[in-house]
Structures are given as C-alpha cells and as structure tokens.
Length: 164
Image 1 (spheres, rainbow, N blue to C red):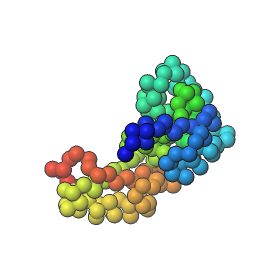
Image 2: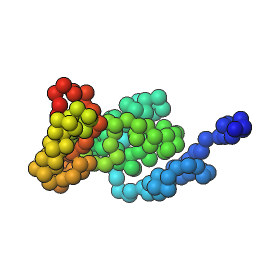
Image 3: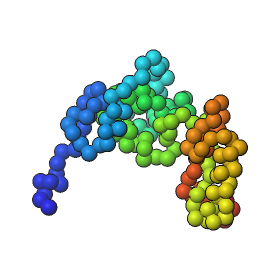
C-alpha cells in the first residue's frame, strides 16, 4: 500500500453541516445532517455553550448539560452545538455515538437497564427482560407513551455476582 493512500485528507462538512466532499459515511447520516426541525427553541443550548465560553475542548460537558435539559440530544441541538463551536456536525455526532450515556432518542424519566452479559443471561436475565417488557408494554429500546420509563438492554452492569 502506498503512503499517499494513507495520507488522504479527511472528509469534512461545510457550514450547513452537509458533506463537503464524498466520504464513507452511510447515506442515513447524510440525510440526518440535512434535516433541521423548525420551531425548536435553542436559547437554552446557546446559554449552555456560553457558560463554557464556546470552547471546543468542553464539547462532552456541553453535550451532557444539553442532554440534561432535554433528556436526550435533539438533532437541532447538535446542529447548534456544532455551529457555535465551529466543529463539523460529523465530529459532534461521532462523540455522541461513542459514549453510551448520550441518547439521540427521547428517554423516559426512569431508564431501566437489564443486563444481558454472560452471567446474567445464564441466570435468567432474558426472562427478567421479557417480564419488564411485558409489564411496561414496550419492547427493549423503547419508551412508554407517558415518557416515564425506557427499557434498555446492556452488555454488562458490572455486578455479575448479583446476576441477573
């Protein structure tokens, strides 16, 4: 493999959050970047960013504060953060999808996490998940209609001795 192949310039997005040149991103990500919901009040997002003096190095903290306000990270808020910090939307999206504590979908007030790790699975974690799903009336990864509960299945909660 030639060195020139390894030193290609990375793809970037333009000021509108659209891909400036083709890259390996999935088409769904490009469509996501093109849509901007109208009517969403983003003054709170601007206030959070101003609280960190618009510093790019505080991106994770800014996203945490924004998520605390909305209980998830709306697309319009991510676009505003990228715009105000002068970052490509793809960079903000990459950070959000890397950390499991961030959510791109609205969560309930209470998040119920059921472990599906090996120890929990062998000791009935799947049955527990099915029971919680039945009682709440939602499949895993969904939120109840009243926005009170979200059911998530995780790989490990770190309490294997207490399984499930």
